[in-house]
Amino acid sequence: MSEIRGTFDARARRFGIVAASFNEVVVSKLVEGALACLRAHGIDDGDIDVAWVPGAFEIPVAAARMARSGRYDAVLCLGAVIRGETPHFDFVASECARGVQQVMLDTEVPLAFGVLTTETMAQAFDRAGGKHGNKGWDAAMAAMQMASVMDRLPPKD
Picture 1 (cartoon, rainbow, N blue to C red):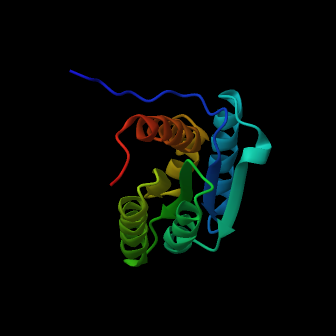
Picture 2 (picture 1 turned 135 degrees about the vertical axis):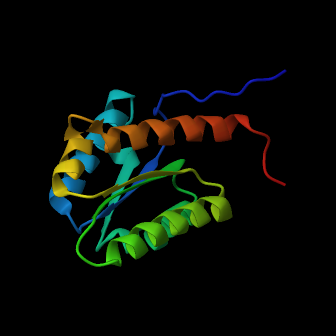
C-alpha cells in the first residue's frame, strides 16, 4: 500500500488569492489570515498574488484565469456571503461554490474554498479571526496540503 499525504511547507511555491470586495470588512480578515499562514510556512510575499474581485459570484472566473496561467501551485478563494432578506444569498453562494469546483476539476489546480456562507455578520466575524478561528488560515493550509498531494500523484495523461 502506498499512502500519499501532503505537507504544509510553502517554500518554493506560488499561491494566488482571489478575494471578494463585497463584505470587505470580513474578507480582508480572511486575506490577512491566509497571508499570515503562508508566511508562517515559509513563503515570501513575492510568491503570492492577491486579486480583488467585486463579489463572490466573480471569484470563479478570476480563479480560472489564475489556475490556467500555470504560475500557481494553488489558488485560494476567499469571500463572505451573508444571508439577507432575499434568496440572492442562495444563488450567489451556490454558484460561487459550483464555479470554484468546476475550475478545479477543469484545470487540476487545487482551489481552496474559503468563502464564508453565514446567516449574520457576527457569524462571519467569528470565522474571520473570531471565536471559530480564521477560515482564511484554514484555506491556506488546505492549499498547501493539496499542492503537495498533487506533486506526489501520478502525472496527468
